[in-house]
Amino acid sequence: GAVVSQHPSRVICKSGTSVKIECRSLDFQATTMFWYRQFPKQSLMLMATSNEGSKATYEQGVEKDKFLINHASLTLSTLTVTSAHPEDSSFYICSARLRTGDNEQYFGPGTRLTVT
Amino acid sequence: AQSVSQHNHHVILSEAASLELGCNYSYGGTVNLFWYVQYPGQHLQLLLKYFSGDPLVKGIKGFEAEFIKSKFSFNLRKPSVQWSDTAEYFCAVNPNSGGYQKVTFGTGTKLQVIP
Image (cartoon, rainbow over all chains, first blue to last red; front, side, top):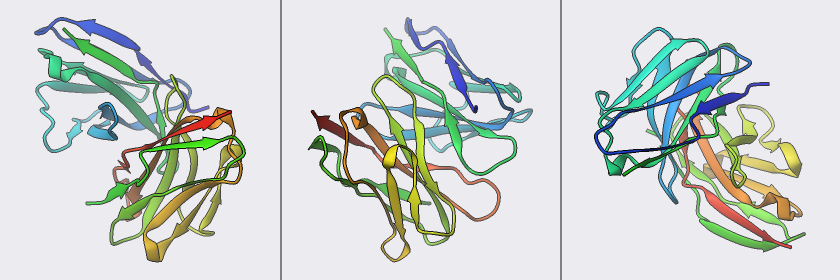
């Protein structure tokens, strides 16, 4: 149980275009989903916390107009990277917290974004 | 704000060797502690967690970790590693202070086990 999926797993896009990444909790309802960014040889950096039906809470330094997050249902959150630039190339990982339960997060497999 | 440091960035061991990965955190209050593992090409998985109670926590695949409050540490151990333990290991912490607090991750330790 507690499986989280992400789509796509890899995406290559051109500078200036937008890319949408989906995060789904497959067998549970997630009150809260989290979006992380992972740079090579670095830790996961929390970008934003997404609560179903409300606006996402962004971490300091993360541009909310560039990284649009929509948590439309208890099983789906999307991250849209708008007007992508090469420096946005990274590994994006989402996680989800059970609607009821402890502080454990369940992670998706990640999405590798390459902006050319 | 809390922070987590993992001292070893890359560890190479032979099979059957014992493993200890260091993790220290900084936060003044009560915390929840986690160790996650990321096998090559796979997503992060929870190895074990500590919320309260016995400070020696046993996880999956023979791993354990000990919370030493006085040292702000939560080191991961395994008495005898296997080649299949080759992975990256992340320590994480979040404050246990009512409601949900965000989780902060360490920079990770890459473990390479040589057959």
